[in-house]
Length: 279
Ligand code: PAF
Image 1 (cartoon, helix red, strand yellow):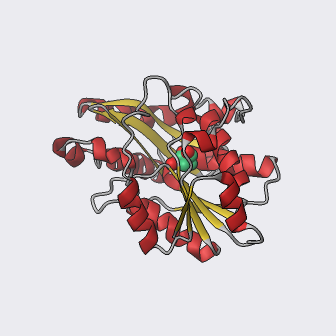
Image 2 (cartoon, helix red, strand yellow):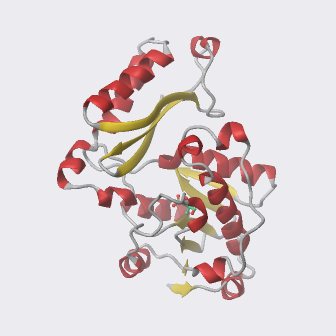
């Protein structure tokens, strides 16, 4: 595997490649990331991964400085997955001058759910993703459904800018007890790790209620938030949305069998976890 930090060198290596499959990451790779690499391999060749902890998508009081950085271990894992190039730019490579041009997602999608609780987050994500896609110029790029809203925003961006990259969705990779794998799980204490699967359990309870005909969305959301709070979580939201556009369903949508997804974000101790489940 070649490890490349400069955009120019990356372009030289990928010149003429028409089937590149790309997986952007912020490192601290776990089996969830590796499942994205495997999916990328099915959709193209060569597989290119990136590791870049993108300052633009972190708020001033968020965990940019303490975000886990495990470069050497990551390299070994990617080598085993047969990744051809690891693009690992420094901040200077990626942002040699202040990044004044940014991509701002539409308010209805960018300022709801995660966007409501992490102002500016999606502008940071779309800006770096557009730049990474411009560097790698892949035919496909793989994003996990764990970050459901991110996946939708990136997919819509790619469509609206007519980018030549197809965005592929990868299923969420879960531990045996249901916890969605995430780099931030490494912040959890042993007790918190034991409690963490509750989030997925609560999402399943909501989904089961909807499937069995319970159509009062607000009541289901309130009940789920109360259950988390009672177990010492601090939920930001548990929200049932339409899969098509992540907007809240109207009563008519529910009755007409509109496809739904329930999304949640909650803090356990100091660790903020997110998860979702398609209904
Ligand atoms: O999902 C992530 O790890 C990041 O948001 C991404 C897509 C690599 C952009 O920094």
